Image (cartoon, helix red, strand yellow):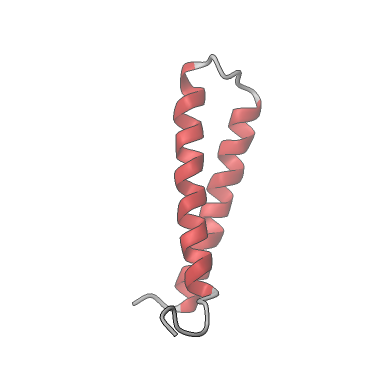
Length: 65
């Protein structure tokens, strides 16, 4: 199990990667070959970030109440 600090560190790392990819995408058009690849990477990073945020802000209560 990872510690809260490790999760926050990974989340910060993913945020930096996301910004980097967004910057790279700004200079490209959708017709560019690397545009699709970068867009897919961005989607994966956003998914990972959402999962980590969920872990940090774990919902309270029970699913089956």
